[in-house]
Length: 453
Ligand code: BES
Ligand code: ZN
Ligand code: ZN
Image 1 (cartoon, helix red, strand yellow):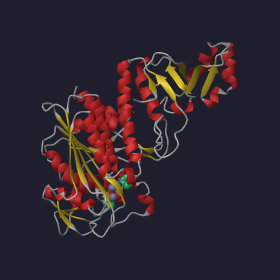
Image 2 (cartoon, protein in one colour):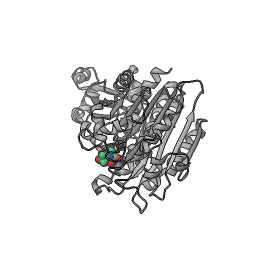
Image 3 (cartoon, helix red, strand yellow):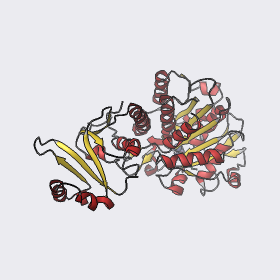
């Protein structure tokens, strides 16, 4: 349960005043308050604390904002306000989203350092709202924790433990294929990418929900560290590659949210979990692999490993004909070049699903941007020696050609969504501290919750 909200109906009043209302609002306040706000330069500081004259206790907190409609209105307050329990005044209609922004902004990854000072908390009187907030913040913070954890402590076996624990908590079923079992069960690409690591490659599989409910299958890229393989990344490109299991973290967080909220769906989560390491048995540029689907793929670049582990998982995902197949992956630098790091790109074979997800993302301030599966570029994936190559012959449109590679493994009849995400905030914004981040998870959850209810 989150420490940042309290199920209670009382707390130190916290009021938001818009800049445009300030002059009018001030006129209606006591001379005492007017003078105090002037003395503490409220206009410039944007935050003012008022004490009770007699007891000296904190009596009211005021926050100056541009607009009351901003989802991230309270995104900095968990860390800026003194510790204590606050109750937001007014804002009845938007309390839930403002509280979520507050909670997400209070996140801190302190597993490997002394914990920061105690944080402010919000009073939430409505029990159902309290629970929804707790579920949402827990899921997003789980994604962040998984991404932020150093690679040495977040290898395939650790991801396996996380999914096994989730299965226990929500009474699902967990199974996995480890190391050579991947070859026996015909997941050759997952084995190939992960075989050079001491941490054995795995395919993790979580199943949950009512047999009769519509099946949603989630697939997440679980590259626990991406060194680039023999096509080794330069140090600047490798520095943050503990986050290359971000796709797995996204689907695990999304699954937790779906299960906690008890959406009336059946869920399957597939995570190919590997380390893309360098060793004498590492796969090589020029090698050819027969994928689970039977398509022969020539390895042009060992750093394009995400699509390789995903293609066998996507093939497996078609087996039980999901109603909707969604994958998340930190797949390409090119997607970041196209959209920047703060806006995730996604691709879909269904116009309706794509529009639904875009709209849902807008509704919950989790914006996502659709990119095209522009078939004309499929020819860039031609190989001279195999059915196709794992990389395009041109770097242009790299996010599109990566998505088109994956599309070769998805049946034309399947409604498929592919997210290419950064999984990381390079800078802090209100509600979004620097470091591991979930992008598009709330957009997709909101879409699923409105479609399946
Ligand atoms: N994990 C990277 C992609 C990545 C890099 C995502 C930085 C987000 C931020 C992926 O495995 C990779 O290295 N992709 C290559 C593909 C290329 C070799 C075709 C890339 O994007 O450069
Ligand atoms: Zn790579
Ligand atoms: Zn990668």
